[in-house]
Amino acid sequence: MPPQGITPNIPGGVVDEVGGVKLGDPNVTWTISERTFQSRYPDGMTFGLSISSSAGEIQQARVVFTHAITSQNTQPAQSINPATGQLIAEWQHDRRPPWLAVDYWWEVTDSAGNSYATPIVEGEYADLTREWIRMENDDIVVVSVGLPELAAQLALDAMVAQREIFREAWGELLPYKPRAILIGRLDVWEEWQPGLTNPNVIGTTNGTWGAVVQRVSGSDLTDLAFGTVLHEVAHLYQDCCAAGLPDRELVQRRQRDLL
Image (cartoon, rainbow, N blue to C red; front, side, top):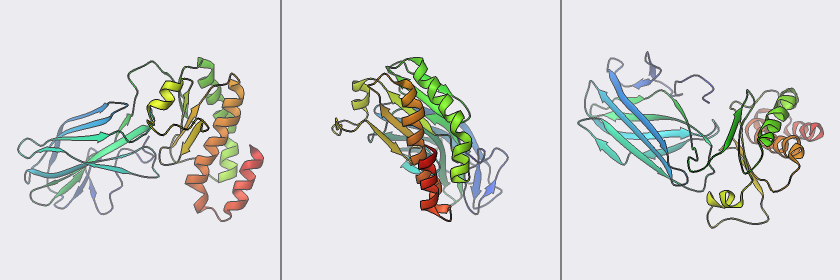
């Protein structure tokens, strides 16, 4: 979820009444008539926009999206209709797991050289091909497949119990809501990383995704939640928060002690 409302952080821009950001002539009127997003997991995502500028036709466009605020992805529009302002950008799958957050906005430029960044929209790289369990609280989003509902609930409980310990150890909470993607089926685990599956690797934690992705084969769900999930979320803190603290090694050691 965007941590600072719905307005993209575009230096030097003028924020309009809907949360978009103007660059160039501040008197230009930008009108959004339609915005679409489709998750095509495991194949990718399709972004659509219909927009017009009072100063000229749309000439350039790209979509920018982030899974966590630690990094951004850009995808130029493959289809631009200058007359109608209809834009299509298709992002192709590159071995990312399902259920990552997708917070996105468009950046467009008209024929007069004015640019506009649309307000941020929240989405998900959802797997619509099968049924998942999805639970969420203030601390984490948990999605699971091939596991009992208790697995997700315990992960929520673990994050609630650990919240103030994380705050004490790192000085602040993560600036985004992390995700735990718990996969109890081998076919689902292999699907999002074709050709790269290593039987010795049962999980990955990626700060640019803001997510813990875990292959679960055991039955100890309490250890999964209060051990594995918390330990891996601590790695997200290391990736995101440690660089700005005065004594990185001390804080990391304190975190290990707490876990």
